[in-house]
Length: 370
Image (cartoon, rainbow, N blue to C red; front, side):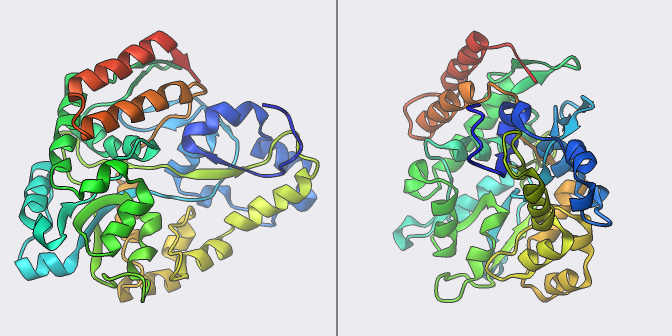
């Protein structure tokens, strides 16, 4: 917003696209202005649709529960697919002869079964700090239960639907799960929660796929090859996986837009994504379909080095993805929401009272629009 030329490239999160969209050079503009710097055979159709639709198109093309296409503009190159999926200790489930649960109630039964604080083993671990992570984590419950944060109309008008009965039920279940989580969960973001899993302190959890590689680092992880990945638990509206990816964009104020255009193509081309996908210290989920289908990647999936890609691809193919739609004033609600959700987990506020507070804040600031 300062129109500073300091940066030539921006990494724009899905929830922030609306805030920065007026300041970004569109992909169409870059293609037309710099044909001599455009990769031969650049295939924009190879990008995974949900990533392109949610993160890189503004206004976004929305899937369930809205299913609205605003005919938005392609603003940035899809960079990453951090999707929240279920992590579980294969060794524990095998030892106990338990099948991996399917529904949320069965998930709760699992974590009760494995919860044994006397052995410093907890049923689960949450990323429930007063931090954006708690909003992301709660999304998996909310949309699976059939709720949503926002009522989005075809004209782009956005009003809050935060304190519905379904949303309250989802938060009540999330709170019940927290009773069997590592006690520090109320102060953990995504990284400490992932570390808890890698240090054998939790039997199962829901976290971002970018931490899958952390589970298998010899000398750092105690669960090498012992963690599996599967679909999130199923509620009345099916399973739902929170997506919080970002893209690479070029600000209008860059002094080097041609060079920046070359860079963001290079960073998202199939060959670079293939390297990141196969690197055991990254195991980065690709944004291109061709990388999923590459024989080298498929071999590592079969061999077991890459164990989370199929879960991610299945969630994408089933359209089981939820997001924080990136309208410009999202920041005015996020702080209130993460604070009140954290108060619930810490036992200071009931789920209904917390969501009523967030709803009132949204009503006072809104309505919103793209």
